Amino acid sequence: MIESIKGTRDILPPESELWRSAEAVARGIFAKSGYGEIRTPIIEDSALFIRGVGKDTDIIQKQMYSFTDQGQRNICLRPEATASVVRAYIEHNLHKTESIVKLFYCGTMYRSEKPQAGRQREFTQIGVEVLGSYSPYSDCEIIVLLDDILKALHVGDYQFKINSLGCEKDKEKFKGYLKQSIKKDVKKMCEDCQRRYASNILRILDCKNEQCRTILESLDIKHDYLCEECAADFNKITDTLKNENINFKKDPFLVRGLDYYTKVVFEVTAKGLGSQDAIAAGGRYNNLVKELGGPQTGACGFAIGVERLMAVAACDKIYQEKPLDLFLVCMNDKASQEAFYILHKLRLRGISCDMDYSTKSLKAQMRYADKIKAGFVIVIGENELTSRQGMLKNMKTGDQKQITLDKIAESLC
Image (cartoon, rainbow, N blue to C red; front, side, top):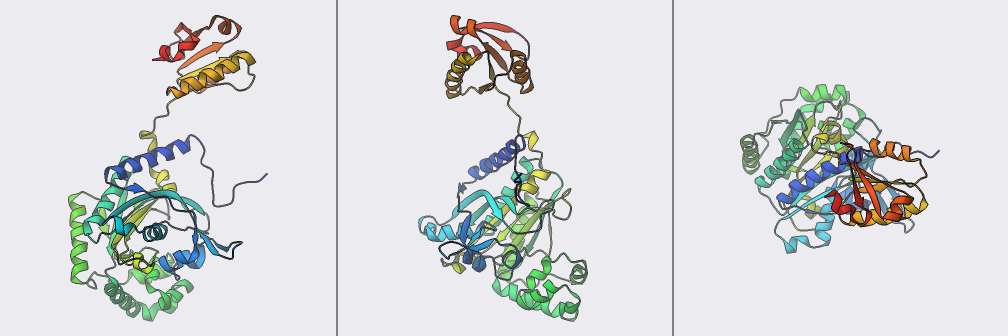
């Protein structure tokens, strides 16, 4: 037997309906805020992410699925969506048509990680990107949008963590502070952190190694590296979030795992997920558009990990399974032929209905109709075909009434 690849999974009914409900909630919230949907390819040029995400990140170093195709092109499966959205923004000259472009997406991403609870090799993200705005209120908008989605999906006991990396000059000051502060302890850190110390020191703050965390937590990190403008923007954002009653805390160790972030970064953690407790994350990336060949452009966004979201959301509170309106019980092949014709007409009129496509007995078909909680049942046999009349049974009350087969829709209304 051939099974699904490790790190991927099938999403079957009724779970798939809960996923669809969650996506529908997010789409509705995005639409009310002026976001349009973008769908980008699953495969991209590997250079897009090497340049955009950063060659020294774990995504590029360890996790990206990349290969050379038959045309000798270096292709990869997208590990995240922001770089793809920015590529599309530049390629289609969206900056020339609108001053601010607000987009959302929903799709699968791919990273070659060790599968565990809350972490798959194929995973789904719902996210937004706002391109063309430097305003801190754009950051506030996407954070409030994310909070609205989590509330609408009845996610309990979650918290936003927020930090500011500052502009490029601020980041360099912060890097210098980190280098100086941990210089004496760097040889006590893991091999990855020793490499990051020389190549990309901010990545050290992402390390989960216990010894490394102990060293890092001894640091007294403040926001005094921020310039006047970045500090003012950060204060505007945190003040606005307080006014909006967003549950957040400042976390000076939060940097996120992607090099393109500048200024504000944030993530949302929820209880009940173990060590992989982040269900969403995002921030500002003012230099990415230019880095990928476009104009200097302010931008920010977030992504929700749907697998983790579904583990903590109470989607059953927004999704109520709607059973079939009608089930047709067929006594012979001729009845099945007539039922198939009836089904198509009813479905076109918006009535959910089905029939048995096997040769089960009357008793077995009635038992199945009861199992799927069909609202009504009609039995079609020789007599019904001849008279064009049938008995419509209400499966909830047991009441029956005679109807004309050609007027079933009217009888159900």
